[in-house]
Amino acid sequence: MKKRVKLLVPEASRNMHLPDVVVSADLKEVGTPTGGTRRCNLTGCTGTRIAVRWEDGQLTYPCTKGLDQTDPSKWRIIDHMTTEKRQFYQARYIPDFSIVRLPDGRIGWITGRTTTQGHALVHVDRNLAAQVKLSEQLELVKWGAQLAWDELERMEVEDV
Ligand SMILES: [Zn+2]
Image (cartoon, rainbow, N blue to C red; front, top):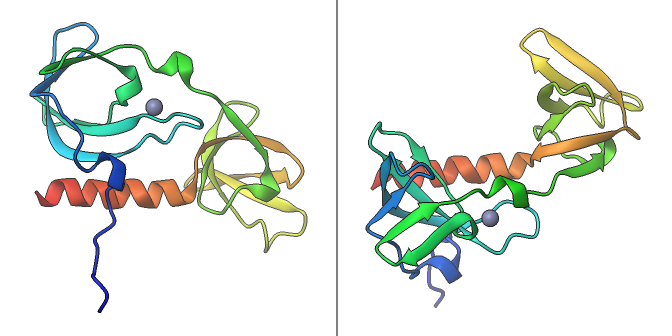
């Protein structure tokens, strides 16, 4: 007989210690961990993202590698962006519905790698798409699958 297992949260972080509160880098805002966790989505980062609900109702996911945990009950956000690695791939290797950055800085979602001969489309606006060569290097902002995962995580957190 097989057990049915819910696999929305990585096994390793299921029983991790969470603080009572998380404070912003400027110490002005206080948030509360909701209990939701997931692996960090930055390339090469082994940290865990913890879901934090702030006083204004916003939900964010700071990474444990970007948190000062000196006080086990009160973690403080420190700069994490400096450790973020930018990822570049040829357009042909980026799955549809991923979010990418064009060389001119505009951000959009990519489609059509298989339907448009030799080109992909990067939709930067409701009515505007840039045509890019499949061999062109684009900065990957978020994999399509990661967006779906984020949505699942958001739904799970809000269920509680
Ligand atoms: Zn991280």
